Length: 115
Image (cartoon, rainbow, N blue to C red; front, side):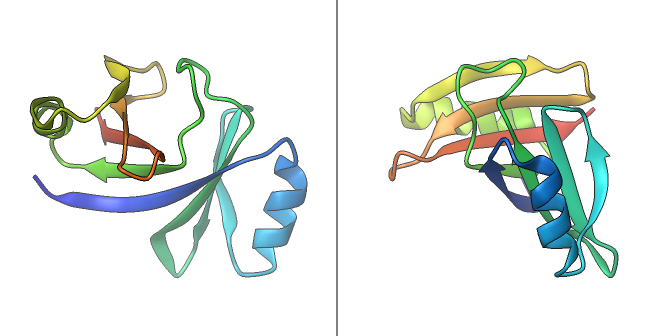
């Protein structure tokens, strides 16, 4: 299993203000679903940050996302390790398959692969 990118998620109701702020650092909006917006660096597209008001299908807002090439393998490893699965493995309408797991620090990690 390979990691493709890691992206912090900022929980906020100030999406537009956040877009403007991070725009000063060179980020541009690359996705906006209304409840989550992703900003990326044009010169290094995998350098990203997301701003989320509330997760559309999960009971909690994650602290970060980790995109992997094989989400099934990641899910099995986390489940088999005894880690707390916060949100089950499932397909989402916006084109990802994902699950949430809690890290040892209490942070919620959204682990995903694009379909």
